[in-house]
Length: 278
Image (cartoon, rainbow, N blue to C red):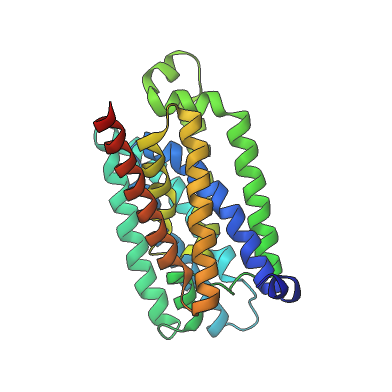
C-alpha cells in the first residue's frame, strides 16, 4: 500500500486529506458537543449535499460553467450556517428550532437538485458515503487551507470559545463578543463539514464530529485532554476506514463510523471497569 501511496497522486491526496479531517473534525466537535449543538452537523451536512447536487446540476445542464461540487457545497454550507444564526436571533426563546428548519430546507433542496441533475450517479454516491479515491489535488489544497484556518482560529480564540462553551451569559458579561465569536465558530463548522464529506460522506459526517468526542469524554480528566483524545480517536477511525476502503473496495465512511463506535464502547467499558475497581 505504501508503494501505491507514492505512485498514485489521488490515493496520496485522499490519505493526507484523511489525516487533516481526523484532526479538525473532532477538534471542532469537542466544542460542538460541549455546547449541545450536535445536531448542527446533521443540518449543515444536508445543506452541503444540496450545494453539491446544485454543482452537479450546473455541471450537467450548463457545461460552460466550471464549478466543482466541493466549492458549491462549501458555499451552501456557509450560507446555511449564517441562516442558522439569523434564525437563532429571530427565535430567541426557541433557538434550537433553527437547526431543524435549516435541515429540512437542505433536504428539500437536495431532492430538487438531485432530480434536476438526472438522479443519483457514482459521483453523488461518493459524496453520500465517502470515497477512498475522490480527492483531487485542488480539493486537497482547499481542505489544507481550511484546516490551517481552523487550527489557527481555535488557537487564537481558545479562551473565548472555551468560555462560550461552558457559560455564554458570563462570556457576554465579561466583554467577549459572543455573537461574533459564535458566528465565526459556526462558519468554521460549516467549512469543516463540507471538507469532510468527500472522505466520510454526507450521511455520516456528523458521526466523525461527535463519536470520538463522546468516547474521550468517558476517560478524559479535563477539557484539553478530551480534545487531544478526540483527535487521536478520530485519526484512528479515519485511517482504518480509508485502509479498509482501499483494500475491500467499499466506501470508507461506514467503516470510519463503525470503528468510532467500537472505540466508544471500549472507553465505556474502561470507565465501568475503573468504577468497579474503585
